[in-house]
Image (cartoon, rainbow, N blue to C red; front, side, top):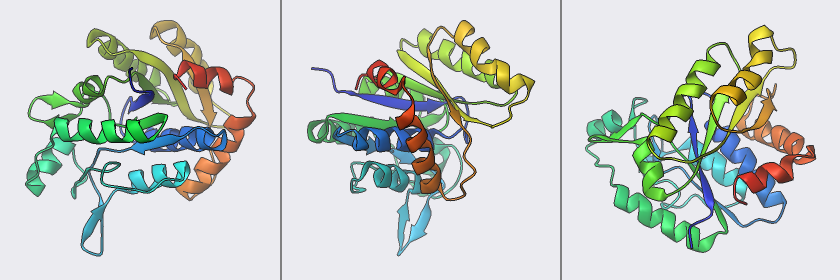
Length: 239
């Protein structure tokens, strides 16, 4: 039986992958789903009491109501650069088999596991291996997170096209951070992406005015939980 879960990737860095993953974890948890989270590789980590810590992993865990174990956050890297470069600077080798073992343990513990990648599909992780290769290794469909701003059509269509060429299933696209009063480009983005990328638009999520990350997660989670189509969206994600 295939593991139930989703691999969250983005059209770029900073598009809100962690918030989207945390919101999904929060909504599933509130609906009684046993949900696990995983951020296998994080660069640009903070040092706390002599140990590097992934803020992304901590947010995912807080939203899901689970502990941030080593299986959740395997590789915490110091420098805020591409993971392959950060790992090299730290003298670390990112091992796909170790990530797969952690994912297998989490899948045995939880009914559904949300895995967040780093940056986009073509981000290098180890040698010639990319984020796309990790998604394939875990055998998970993709949820692509895109921004609403000008340029997002090109970025999103390219990401979905690359995924399809690499044999990865795209479960859908979430356009994250739509402002309350979108401009012309933002208004037209979802329609253009939906017609061009060959994958379903699973949501156009609002921009939050909250400052704290968990505050954003709680606000958007409450909004998402009220939407009539959320149950359908979750089924599309294999929940």
